[in-house]
Amino acid sequence: MTIGEAIQKLIPKPQEVLERFSGNQEFMETFILKFPQDATIQAVKDSCKTENWDKILADVHTLKGTSGNFGFEALFAACSQVVTAIRAQDYDGARQGIPTVLAEMDKVCDVLSQVE
Image 1 (cartoon, rainbow, N blue to C red):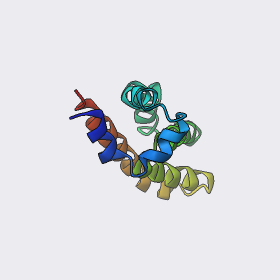
Image 2 (spheres, one colour):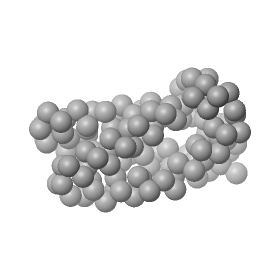
Image 3 (cartoon, one colour):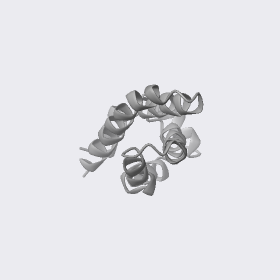
């Protein structure tokens, strides 16, 4: 799979993301390809195994920002739901949303791992 094909699968509005990278396609692609190695990925996986809501909030909020900047809208939406639930102390809602965060995160990483 090419990076272009991966972007088509993962980013509904690639032109908006490209604008965040000052129109530099190569720069954008380089950062997107590095996403699976971001320390936040493992931090989210680890914290979501606990019920340390402060840590989960911090990690998922960080992932929310990164996914939003890269245009991974499904991951961004899942993170937003969990962040909102934790802030409202709706821990049952957060528990229900965490599997979606993890699944969307894995989907992004899986697609990017197929780029040759």
